[in-house]
Image (cartoon, rainbow, N blue to C red; front, side, top):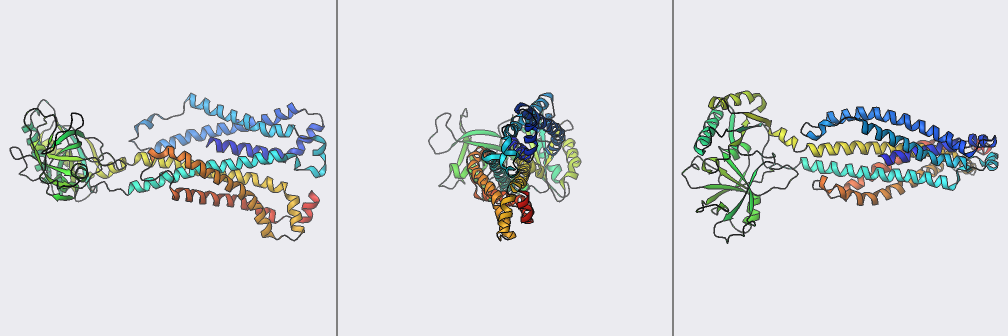
Length: 527
């Protein structure tokens, strides 16, 4: 954005210097030295830079507050964003540096003009010289190249975000409320007391009209889970440290029914899967693909590796659909579900309630808390969310990235349009004599239109071609921000190119319309 703005600033200053060429020549003929002319133009560009920098700082202060207000609360690192002295000095320094460096080019061009030649009536416009014309053309071309890179980047993020939103989480989040419970170790150190608490809470919640409740150690999309290495009965044991690994989640109640996670094979847990009964487990489809690719997993037995004492084999009784546990943009890991009641891990004292309701679940929060506290009034209830909120949380980073780069892309598009629109009138003014001759020789208005629009379009399309090459290289740095979109996605490149081309042609059209109305007699007499 800074490079585009600098190119804009330099191009407009050079065009302005050309328009004032006669003024500079007259000053030089009256005795003004080159250093004085340079000081004059540098002073003017410096004042512009200071005013622009001050206005930019005011806009930045407002814009920062605006962006922070758009920022979701889940992005905690953004809470400390504010304007401070270091940022203020940096921005002001950049403004002054930009004004000095890019104000020097038109100042030097004005100071080195030939006074005698410039005073000739027919020399007007010629003092710009081929170097000045080429430099202005390069600035406009560079603007469009940089703008296309930003546009393509924004297009990639938008397409990736669109695909991310269409990803199925593996369950139905509608009308599901979740809340976290933590059992204190002092009163719930043993598994039987933990199991009894869970059963009583679920019984009370399921007695509420229109409520279906279940429990799981860690809710989907939370990114929290405990991993275990395991062994498969009948297979050679893997070396220590190389055992297969999986997510492990303990559940109670009709968890898969409440979350509406489809059963792909076998069955879910029942009331018979309790303490004292044969140990059972349910795995997800990813675990089947990874560990049972060419066999039926139902009936297979697994156990946690490195167990001291004899194995306690769990029989796989069901296969469920994959669930996005770490976020919509993360791959699904193998997962094993086991009943809380059959667990021998007394340290798992935390759990998440999953409550599905017939209507909006938020209105039942207090009723659910009362039911929990009716079992034990000292149990803390925290992290109350709806699953739809958690779905939104999993998208916040991608949405904010898309919004931020989208704003930059819109600004880049505006700056590129301003750049070519600011340059074209001066290019038309320099070609007034040529246009007059064309019209005098019989050229029609549409011919003049094609001439002027074509002149600007060449610069824009050259910039677009360079921008495509630059974007092919630079967008590879965005790979980690994209979801199911390649950095060379043809759709994003095509739409960015078409949009920028339309803006370029529109910016060239207005000066071309003015050129169409040139009176050939006035144009020839002017020159």
